[in-house]
Length: 123
View 1 (cartoon, rainbow, N blue to C red):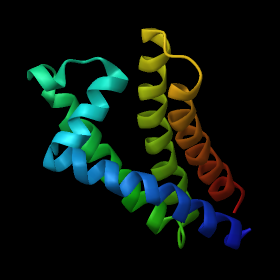
View 2: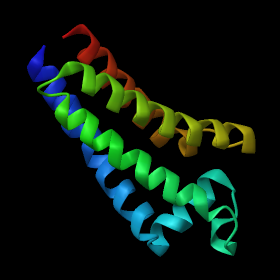
View 3: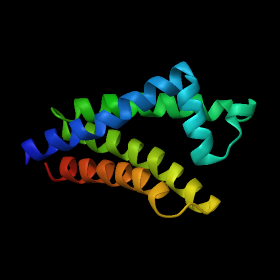
């Protein structure tokens, strides 16, 4: 069980760490991607608070899933934070009418976070 949790945590972190960095630093590439996915207008300077909140949530999620390797409850909380963040973006995409390949990435990220959550809960 621990090996599966470790592998899934690493896979999740491969996506989450860059997301946290680009949101906290407000890197142009991250803003462009987030704006395309959520249609919040961050490239026009609107709703910039969302970028900061997502960066902080991803950072807290990272800490949670890493600590979760030792303390499973922290992993559950960290993975729940990531599930919420990725799920929110996925819902924004669905509301905007995205279909097919555009939904695949955030569907996958949300699923990975859920798997990490379940694996930690089972431990």
